Image (cartoon, rainbow, N blue to C red; front, side):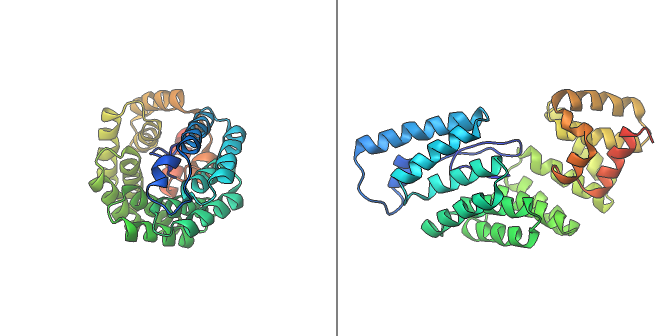
Length: 269
């Protein structure tokens, strides 16, 4: 998950500080009220374009804001997020680096750069960035969840489990962190607890496709074919990417045991 200093993508949500708000908290030139209000309007257009999936237009707006407010770390970080959405990962890192240079004590650019390092398979670098976020804000649930993801990428399942649990302790409604917690427990062999958590999530969030797909795999391995099929209908009706085992493995990055379980279901094994 990345974080906007606004919001976006399949695995992201959060909140942005506008140029006006950031002008109050960062060392910036004296802009007129008219300039700041115009900056706010452009930022809103950029957000709308990103929410519509029009990343090229959104990038143009953020670039315009960078030209007008080059000392503002938020606009650099947000353009970096747009470049992540375009899979321009090195360009995104360059923008996050600039944001960090401008505001080295702001946690969000480190969090966002960490997600890019994860996408590039640089899990140790990602963990270093998440550690920095937690140094700046020890109660950042997103950083704990993301660090768990990076630790899972290194096969450090007990560390991942501890971080996912911490994320859910800090934010009990953080459904994705709780789902990650269940998946990691399943990988580590605590399948009873994993099943219980997944069932609870499905009851609380019936439209959460990840947990529906996870229950499909878990129940199929338990020989509960009817329940597995029922959850599968719900899962693919919400998000058909779970039919692609390679996507589940390399993009969603389920643990190996869960990937194997879902693969058995898909192949009726």
